[in-house]
Image (cartoon, rainbow, N blue to C red):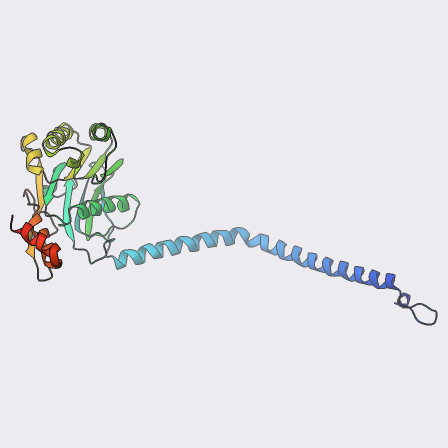
Length: 308
């Protein structure tokens, strides 16, 4: 524009005209940019809802593909459900969180099981490090996965629909004052409630001395034996004493250790033998410690082994 330069000599640039040109250019650029953004927004808003739905579908597809891949890799199967009876039974069930290749176990309790496993209450005895706690965890994981609508790590499983699953871990460490009273009160409430449930308990006798524990646990289990909505599997080392308190009216299964192999690992059939009281076999653990230790430690375990 002619207004940029003055008409006099020497020529002088009109700064106001330059600033006006810059302002007009900025306005034009902003206007063009805004119109472009508005056009993009108008076109985008039309596909936002379908896009969100598509993304949600892709996430769901990815989830199911992940579940399917996990199920195939772990040889899982869809469980069978029982609406009328509580309980759990699995064939070739495996604990998939172990840092080793899990050994398959066939086991169960409750009316959903085959005839030999239909007892609602069972005691599980057996070797130290024989897999009793692992079996409890396997049964618990199968129940949880089944109720989540997911495949379970077993070749076949039948699970009764439950209101509750109680997993009572082994007592360890120092117990606070009143721990026995609170434990017994809670356990009694759970055992007699009308909610359909499975209770998986690990060595509850640790809450008090063995003699009293057998009387307490035997009495509680006897009281719950008439409750058809309650299934109990109790891992214990005092199964014989509990059975005597219950008048012998309880199934005792056992995981038996046959010895040690050349690597000093336990030779164990992880599937419990029905109606069989298995020994704890602590001498096998002591023998393994004696073989794997050195120096004075090995001598201590060797001397201890002679006492068995």
